[in-house]
Length: 143
Length: 143
DNA sequence: CTGTCTGCAAATGGTTTGCACCATA
DNA sequence: TATGGTGCAAACCATTTGCAGACAG
Image (tube, rainbow over all chains, first blue to last red; front, side, top):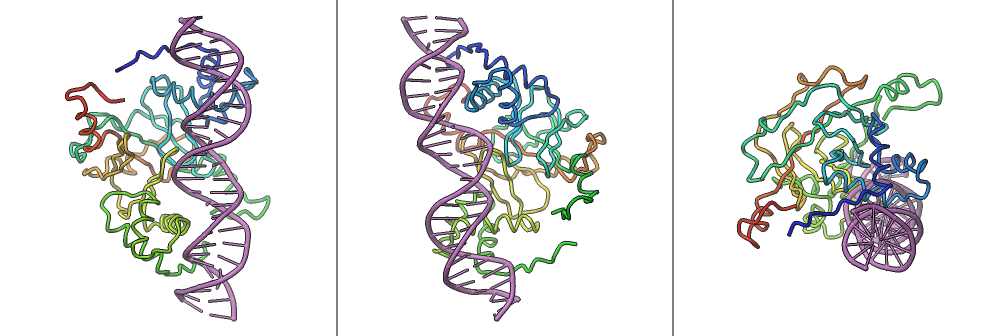
């Protein structure tokens, strides 16, 4: 039943992975689309989505989707934490070791077979903190 | 600074909160819509969404959102963990104390002002495990 | 060759929103 | 009575998918 999936190495797939690996932050599919288009002008957003999904399925990249809104992607697959800005949506790495490891998993999981976990911090990124602190321009009220 | 928002106590708002509180699992907006319709047949899905959003803004309920999927809602606001079934999307409580508390928050957060965190486990729920096992006894792991 | 992948575009599906009317305070 | 809330439906938007042609193996 398990087909070995032939894993074709298309140029699009290579470039998507390369460009994602260049980034230290974690772009959305459409942000990555813009970047990849500089090298492959005809590539479609659908191809970006298909490959990001594929790459995360085979474990080559991570899909960061615990929050609402657009999914974001990370070429670093080693377990690590992320911080998301609730104002602009940006996601960065948190410089700290994994806080939760499978050995820590609770026992009573209501009969679920546990496969993993998602953890992410949220807050306000430096840029948004600054622009919130200095409402010089325009009477912007922080929500 | 924030206006005390007049917080009108409409029947719709009451019933939505009441019905959500009756549930130990964590319904989607449309699942809750179906339930609430039994008491308020004319209520619209838009009103469900508006009130769930409002209630989570004022901190009366929790919104468990995930990108690309339906948000789910929890009337219990005390910190606790959730388990999500990657097959059917169901969300249950994990019976365990909070695994991460603010004191555990890492120091270097890239200049972010940290406001909180999200942690959730994922796996296969009992029902999906069973239906995956039944067609072929002892079959290997599902996708 | 053959089965996979791509580009394009339309479809999907959850969520949001504009508007006129209604009901709470 | 004055607003905020509701119902309805259309709009929105991230993501998925059908299809015909392109291409890797």
